[in-house]
Length: 466
Image 1 (cartoon, rainbow, N blue to C red):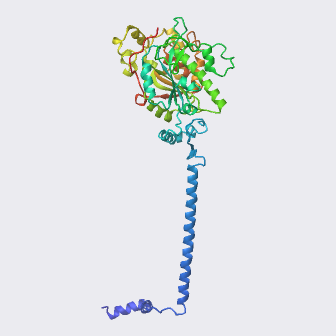
Image 2: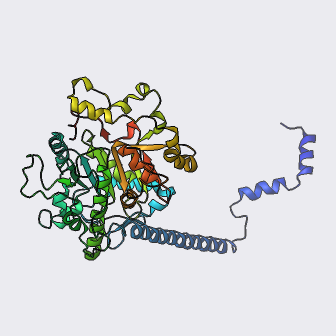
Image 3: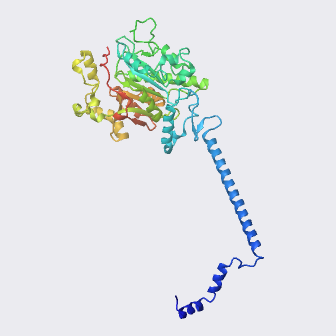
């Protein structure tokens, strides 16, 4: 209990303390005529709050609905051709390749999204377009090379998207939809002229520039770029639909590759002109050369193509394959990377003498006389600071524009700079050297061992040409 004096002091400090206690304990501390007014005001405030909350909720729901409708419209256009603003083909056709090409080929920031989309398209059913670029593949063999059979077996695993060049050009063998589905068009490239005095390369045909016939491939054959096989006793494994017999003597380093690229350039012109007349744009985008001993994993190639090879018109000045350095030619050849030496001197002891001779031809040539170094190296010194690279011949590919350029450059490569030009007699080096002479920057796709979609060498050594 508080003392009387202390209690009196508290009351003096809080003179209304007792009145506050009474007011707080009295339910009727306000006049009775004020209570209905306060209750009515409370109900009105509650009603206004409810209306305001309902209005805000309705507005939010309406805005969310409009947003969902906009997203749905953005992801699914009326014709079903776009997803996220990027093209999605809807038929088994590449006729609309240009209009349906993702814009990300020109936008590096969107490359990952574009790659993911194209990877997704690989998983769709066969009734949907697979937007792979079309590639003409030349498999370099000889008339009596037995590797053609196992190449055909390897190719047959993906026959839905691989076809022979003869079937692709025929108007009756394949339907239009089958041609459009064909992403790899292959042919065995053979030097078919058995005359020992026949040329080793053909880079032009008579009256080619003045000829108005749009069928360039037929014109080329008429002017003896290709061997007429009618009536000839050819080996059983040389089929007309998948073999291209160039009208040259069989060889490896003396112009066979240049002749094939010239033939391919004529074929590309024919394809472009024909498709323009028919309102189609699914032309051949790349030309690939592979050795007879190169085994391609075509499933891996399809994945590589859809991820890394843009179709026309974005496939400009592109070359790809396994890079080689000419600086290694005259070093310690035995110390060169083992994979580089494969195909040069492996299993020579078990090969026939003619095969040994042919395999040795693949070794780098002897070092030229110092007087020739300016002719062979001045371009590389002036333009590349002495760096001299090329793409190995086991497999390389060129975009269609470079095919046309090389086919034309091959006419002058032997006379540029000086007698003999800048060519050195190794076909893979010489093709690459002509590519580097293109006036526009070159886009190189160097493939490391772990990135390659092929094996090399596979099978027995090829028979030596006569």
